[in-house]
Image (cartoon, rainbow, N blue to C red; front, side, top):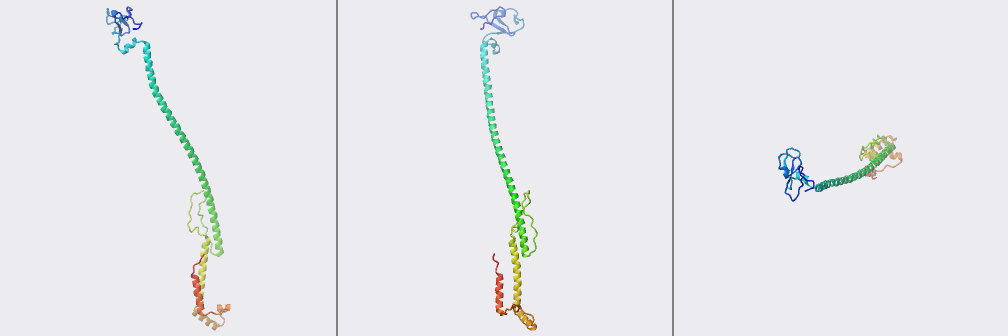
Length: 274
């Protein structure tokens, strides 16, 4: 027992050689076995309040036994408990901090990747914008060049038609939209035909018509009926001359004239070779 334990009435100290028990009252006082067996049973002899007695030994309840233990043991026990509690809490705290640090590291890494990707996309968008501007500028130049070429083609057609005496053609509408517009009007193959081909075809068509007309006149002139009527008319009037007479050429026989007419017709049937 500790050196502080004593009977609050007779001041007896507990000793091993004696068998006097000690009791602990509910009001917080200590009484020896002799003082607790006297009068006023059920009441505390120190304060006079009604109380109950509990013998002080190793079988006391833990909540009461704690008052009779060595404070050093209590401190050590509590320190151990506190250390265990601190270790438990610190373990979970460190685990949480570690998880948060890992999450922050991943977040920072993700932010770095996102920032790098954003910068890359920004640079790529700038390059695409520059390429778009360059393509738009090139398209404007090509549109302007197409307009110039169409103007030159139109002027060349006008000059060509004026040269052959054909009627003027109407001015073509521009096949390319004005600058600033993104709509392109595609021209057909006929729009891209060269005026020289049109002019040549027109020239050959007009030339063929003229040659056909001359062939018909030549056949009419070489027919026997026309020749006989022409000779009779010349003989009768004596003043009307035929073309060979005017040119001073002797009239060819009828068979020779027919041969020349057939050869001329064969020549007209041949296709033109460019």
